[in-house]
Image 1 (cartoon, rainbow, N blue to C red):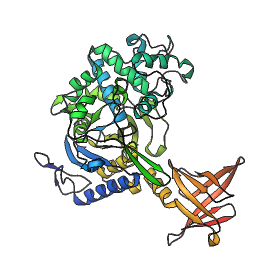
Image 2 (image 1 turned 30 degrees about the horizontal axis):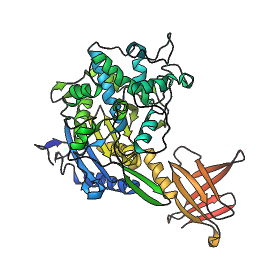
Image 3 (image 1 turned 45 degrees about the vertical axis):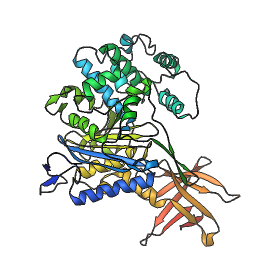
Image 4 (image 1 turned 180 degrees about the vertical axis):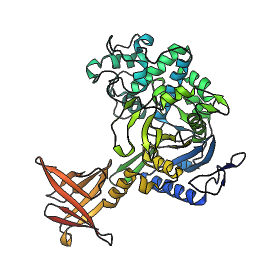
Length: 489
């Protein structure tokens, strides 16, 4: 699949100018590094299928599918495969709110109760506003909307909480007055239900169904003609993902076909299905001040507000201040530039959009499983490559992940008398011993943020007990725990 005409541009800091097509696209060195990165990440995370596209200025410079969109028939993933993009939908909802603000149909500082009088949280003197819902700064913590609905659709761990209509949702939210943990605007809590409320505000302010408004005012102008919220559109499309649960059980990988969740309450916080090629058009508009093929879908000033930190979020200090705008997460100093991004997962599909406005470059990735590369470091590594830098030296988190991978494995003491395993669970190392009577599972807490010295500690009886890994010039790794020395085998 190629662009109609070649795109001429200079990337990776190269002096020569390269003719780039979607099919072959990039300088060979770049392409080899990129595709090796993707293939390794897919194998490590057991990803059935994945699609990727990249943009620069107003063009797609690369688009490709990897693996299978449907394992049972081994149908290949393509750049046009439709995936559920989960919470990446939030930026579309936020853009819709900003469009309505430009039309004078709502004000970001209005109380939510102005549009939804049935909403009961917040105080009269300091109400929760539209702006607070956009920025996840309402002071309301997660109330479990996504967990209730997704588990229901997947037939697992039903909670028996009424959640089939807006009335049910409002009953659930209004009953949580004692859960409110901060004054509006003071603390970040990712609040999916807030975006469902924004979808309702869009309907009441515009007089249109949420999904119809987004299609008419955003998707159609961006030529995202196959992108949809609707089951019927998805099921009749010839190039769609089969979503999968991918689970690791006792060292074996279980892959189970699932169905994508379709429901009105999910639309605004996470219900859009799209392809990486159509999402590339959306990213082009975001890096070009709201312009796409000469037409404006939103004012540049509104887009700038969306891409600006509205409330700070906790996070590592590698990239300066981090925060949330309107439908987007922001790193203020990603290798010298502001990075705007958002990930999303439905539990059986996932996606990420990331771009650097100043450089007008961006990456879109989607896969037919929850989590995996689309929710990890790989998108940031690709952005780093696009900036002409080496991810392995520039991204602290990638360096940490590499160290953790190096340290995991099986260790034995002298003559194999004792055997332990070091395993990685959610980015934290654990020591596991399964030989009776010394069974144990304990976390290893790093002494430093970047694990520079390979030193950790175990908490026991309120005391820090040191744990140290050593690496010699031959690559041999030893592990010292109290008076014990173990050798990696």
